Length: 389
Image 1 (cartoon, one colour):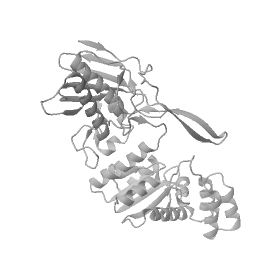
Image 2 (cartoon, one colour):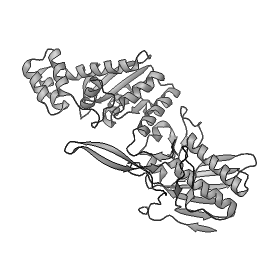
Image 3 (cartoon, one colour):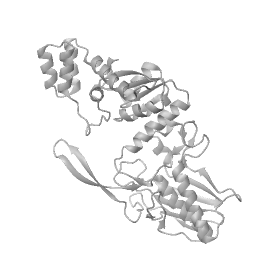
Image 4 (cartoon, one colour):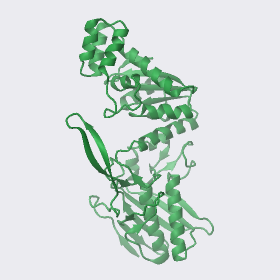
C-alpha cells in the first residue's frame, strides 16, 4: 500500500499549465474603468476527472501518474498535481486540490478525491457519492432522484477518461467511481444545494472544465435550476428575490416554501427570460427600492457596476404623479433611492408603489405572452414593505 496525505490547505496543488487569464474591466467610483487581469480556475468536474484518471491508472498499473493529464470538453489538455495517493489491493484513491483561480468560489482549495474499485462485468462506470458529495432528492434537476449530484458533463468526462485509461493499460473499463470532497457538507450550506434538494454535500459541476472568474453563468444556472425544481414540485407561485431580506419578506407575505424562493440577486432578466420559456403561473419580484428602481427603468441586470439608480428619472416619476416642484427637486438631489423615498413618504406620495408598478410593467414586457401573473414587492433596508403592485 502507498499513501500520501494532502499538504496544508495553503499549499494548494495547482494544475499545469497555469489556468489562462482574462482581461476584465472593473467599474470603480474613484478609478473609473480599471483593466484587471484575472486568472481562470478549474471546476470540481475537472478536478474529479483528474483524480479518477490517476486512481484508475494506479488500479491497473500500480503507480499514480503525477501530474495527471485530462482532456476537457473543448479539447484543452491541462495537467493536475496530486495531493493524495492511496493504493490498496482492491482500491485506489487520488485527490486534487481545486484551484478556482481568481473566482470567489466556495470550493476553492477544497480537496476532491476519487476512489476507484473494479465494477461488475459489463457495468461500465458506476458513480457513488462519497463524503461531502450530495445526493439528489428532488425532481427537476439533470440527474435523477437518488443519484449522486455529479452533473452530466463531469460524468461524461470521467467515463471517457476511464475508457482511455482502460484502452492504454488493458483494463475492462468497468469501474465504480466514488467522488468525495473534504468538508463538502459544510461548504454546501453556502450554496443553493439544500434548497434544490441536493442533500449531504456539494455538486460536482462544470460544462467546460474551466471556471471563468467572476462569471455570472453559475448564478444564472442556479436560478434556472431553481425554477426547474419548483416546477417539478408543482409550485404555482415562485418569488425572485434580490437578497435574504426580500426573500424573508416574500416567504412571510405569501407562505412560500423554500423551493419556491429564487435567489436571483442582480439577475432579474435571467428569471424573467427563463420563465418566459418555462412558465410558472405566478411570479413575485421582491427587492429593495434601489434595485427595483433600476428594473422600473428597464434594466435587467441590477448590479451596481452595470446599472445605476436614475434619480432624475425617479424625479420625473414623482412629477408625473403630482409631486410639487420642491419635492421633485429634493428627489432629484437625493444621494440614494432610500433618501428619495423618505422625502416622498414625508410628502404623502407613494413612491414605492409607483416604482413597483413600473418594475412590474418591465417584467410583463420581458415575459411577453407567457402565462405568468406578476406582482412586485418593494422593501426598505429593514424589510418593511414600502411599495406593491
